[in-house]
Amino acid sequence: MPGGLPPITFAPMAPTPSGYVPGSPIIATQMLHEGLTRLQAGQSGFDLGGGAVVQFSGIPEGLHNVLRDLQESPLGRKANQLESMTIEMVAMLFDFIFETRDLPDGIKALLARLQIPVLKAAMLDGAFFAKKSHPSRLLVNALAEAGRGWSPAMGNEDPLYRKMGAIVHRILDGFSDDLAIFDELRADLEAFLAEEEKNAEANITSSAEEINLRDRAEIAANVARGEIERRIEGSPMPKFLAGFLRERWHPSMARVYATAGDDSEAWSATVSTLEDLVWSVQPKRTSEDRKHLVALLPSLLKRLTSGVQGHAWPPEAREAFMSNLVEAHAAAVKPTYAHVESPTAAVAEAAKAQAEVAKAAGDERAALEAEALAEAMSPAEPAEPVEEPEVLEDQYLEIARSLERGMWIEFEADDGHLAFAKLAWVSPLRGTYLFTNRQGQKALSMTAEELAERFRADRARPVEAEPLLDRALTTVMGQLEGRLAPEPA
Image 1 (cartoon, rainbow, N blue to C red):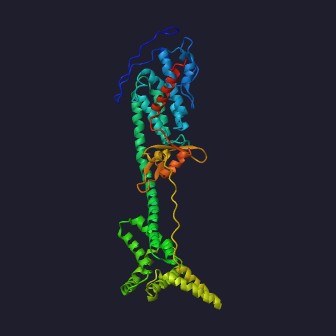
Image 2 (cartoon, rainbow, N blue to C red):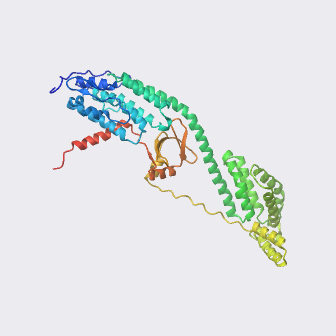
Image 3 (tube, helix red, strand yellow):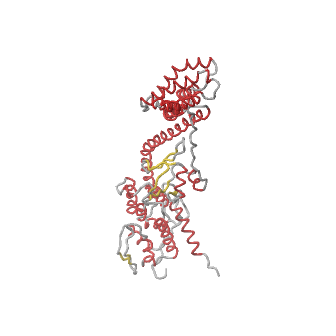
């Protein structure tokens, strides 16, 4: 070899326990092999002879590409063309790792310490770039995937960080020319993560139950409100009764729906009470209807009292409601109101007239009582329509809806800090997403629409699912093709 030592031959490595069969070696320079071995051990300032003095360490602190130092060193300049190209490609892989947003810097710094071992693995096995199943690639990908769940707030004493650090040290201390160590350490990492995942399930289950209860309560409130408003809109009803249904009976119905469901006897009973109460204030045009009301009242009042138990109902409000209900029932059975649409509305009109007479006579108390009765018996207004938030159907919502459990999302907090959270569970009731950290602790929850809004504002983004080195290699090959493309004439 011109300007250097004669090439030597490195025998292909043996198959690994996972069944991977290494290809032919690329490295042919003994000096380079010895230099990489010493760099991997953390040595610096050593002389390999022939002017190949190495001043830098192969184990960097932080995000420093030591392979660029290698290229510029006398040792790198003595490499042959194929070795130099391999160094360049692996250096570009780590450039990609250092630049990606998909990992915390602390994890990148751990991976940075593997630059020399990864380069050695690529030098000793020419199939490194061609095979995704290469043991060193699989281990780096597994470390990167696991590292997404770590954040600086967890600190260097976090069990995952310590496990990853131990794996990196094992490679630095133990990798020579046998790829089996990468298989062994990947299996060790997977066993650790499986145990963590099992422990995290308890936290996920607890958070999921909390969200389920919240979702069920919201659904129950909406269903109960719908049942009540349908009756208010469908039948003439006085204000006092509509107010009772909205403020007092609604919580009872929602509670029953949330705890027992809509196919339960309890739900049927609370709906039946609602219908009986609404029917009781409608005009009774036949003797059979009047007799039925008289027979119904004891049971109806008992059910009302039982239904509102547990909810604050001040005695004065209760007494006013019961007094108005007696007035409404009396009006419903009056023969003179038998053919009006709403007996309580007729009572309200009569009460307004009484109030005017009392005012003219100077009887302030009688006027106030009549005005209160007129207000209570006046026809109830329909509820204001609830404006549903506009759902913007776009690519961001499509991405949010397509997420699957286990996918990672990068979130930006109000202070600009980035954090990674995993989609751990999706509510079957409302499709609420539960995002957790690696230990299964709740990070945040939101709907697909809320997540899509964060995507639009660039305050969240899905983390690439493709393994880190596979993406890096795709980028590197594209960059190399751009370099090698002929310039236009």
